[in-house]
Image 1 (tube, rainbow, N blue to C red):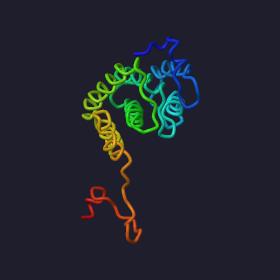
Image 2 (cartoon, one colour; image 1 turned 120 degrees about the vertical axis):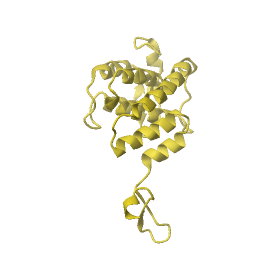
Image 3 (cartoon, rainbow, N blue to C red; image 1 turned 45 degrees about the vertical axis):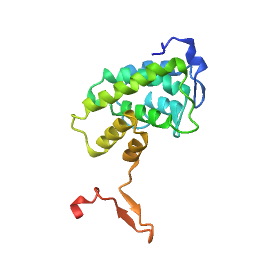
Length: 179
């Protein structure tokens, strides 16, 4: 895992330029309370820098093992934002315009994604609401290499427009009580 004191952070990039500020955000994440909303720090700054509008950066790959390591120390119910971040980075690294993982980060990155999958699996025994379970199942799929399926699970709409008449039609599953 890239040491937070390493000068290599300056050679990595994020949405706004050099990633020299990311180690400080990771340090803040260690003691941050669970986020109350999408503007909660340090999550807001981490997300906007490292997973901005479906894009990832070389610093995203360096940060992910740290995010996994911090998630390990949190109670299962406080890990959802960690899992969401991990899933987003891993899914979006497969986009054709995503930068490759620098060779010196690859081993730690892939080990962290594998460990995250086990951590997610262990967390499934907790009582989650439906929205949280959708995220967990989606991120688990992504971490196991099924990034398209994982994204489909996470972003599956409750209804779609009929291709012939444009009428909203609930997807089977969301309307089981109506069948």
